[in-house]
Image 1 (cartoon, rainbow, N blue to C red):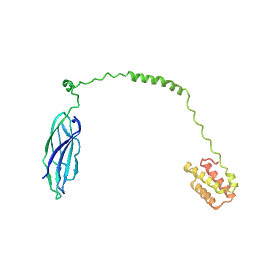
Image 2: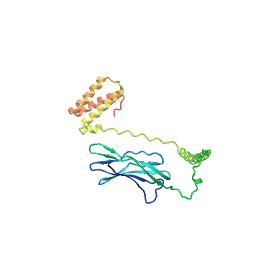
Image 3: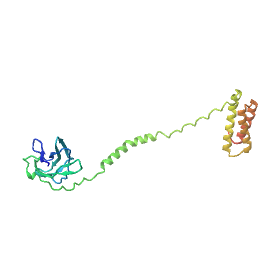
Image 4: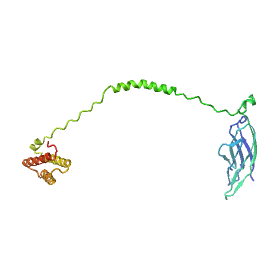
Length: 248
């Protein structure tokens, strides 16, 4: 039903060891059928280089396998037959075909056989004794270079501490009060009284502090007169002094 032909597609010159050689099966494909490459496993001096290639032309299909031979001489391989698939799903497996090809050596023909024989196994290569001389010399050189710099750095003296930041100037509360900024003045005294009470831990009667703080807050939002501002400021200053705070 199907004609078989085995071709070897070689280079113009005779192939040598390591060259790619294509083993091709050419088959006639009936109408309505398709061709698939059969799996092929090779072992020994001839190996398969990659996946097969299928080229279809009309009613003819060529299935090629890339091969490589690792030893010179004549080699015979059995190229598997392609698989012909019918429209109904049936498969026609064609028989394998043997083919022989020759591969030349890549070595010069003038080389003597005795010079190409495998050499015996080499012995263990012993390393020379490691010496610490270079490392010690490098450490000594580093010491000689760094010791003067270290001495010079230490003789610069101790680091002088930075001067403490100057205390902020007192707030011009009297001027603010005269300018009508009573809310600002009362807010400053309320904040100072709360801070002094928090630091003292209850050294003054808490109701007295609470009453004064409430009066300061009420006066801030009620628009106190200059006399009220002076009286509340004096009360807050006295409490701050009693609590151990700065009345400034």
